[in-house]
Image 1 (cartoon, rainbow, N blue to C red):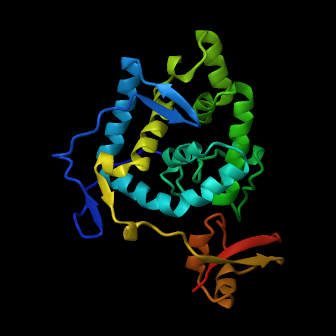
Image 2 (cartoon, rainbow, N blue to C red):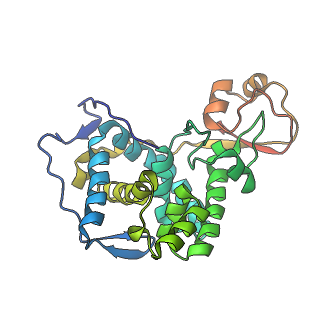
Length: 278
C-alpha cells in the first residue's frame, strides 16, 4: 500500500528528529533477506534501495504509524509465519501491502495481505455477504503463508517469491525465461514490481533501527496488543447489535475487533468472535 505525506505534531508523545537537519546514514554494504545476504555492489541496485529508504524516511506520518502498529500486530504475524515455516522477513511484505490496516485497493484487494477475491477463495478464505476472511488477520496470514510456500516451491528463492506476490508466479517465471536470468536484481520488471522488494528491504532497515533514520518514538506511545476474550458461537446470530449487548459490549466494538464480519448477522454456525475483556 502506498504511503501518503502528512505533517507530524511535535509533542511529548512522539519525538521525531528534525528532518531538515537530519542526515541519512550511508547505505549498508549488504542487506539480508530471509537469511540470505545480498551484496549491494551495483550502482543501480544501490540507488533503487536508496530511493525507497528516502521515500519512507520522509513520509513521516505513514512511517510513524507503521512503527507504532508493528508493536501490536507483528508478534501475531511472526507467530503464524514461524508455525508455517515461512521466513519472518515476510512480515515486511505485509507491512508494505497494507501498512497494517484493513486496506481496500481500487482493484478490490482487501486486508493486511491484500488478497484479491479469486486468490483468497483459492487459498481457503470465505467471502460472502456476511463475512470476508481477508479481513481476519490470523486466517489471511495463514492463506498468505500457503501462497508463499507454493510460490517458493517453484523458485526456491525467497526474494523471487516476494516479487511473485506482486507480479504473480507465472509472470515472474515468464520474465526469468524470456530474459534468461536467475535473480530478482537482474530482472527488468514493471515499475511496481521493480520497486516492490526494495520497499520491503527499505522498511526492514528502517523498522529494525528507526533511530538511525530519524525516528525516536517513546515505547509508551506504541500501540499495545489488544487484550480480548473469545466467544465460541455455535448458532446463527440474527441481530448482531443485540448479540453484542447481550455479551456485554457494543456493535461498534464487535466490528472493530472482528472486521471480517461485514454484515449485521451471521447465518452460519461455528464462529470464534473476539470481544473486549473490559
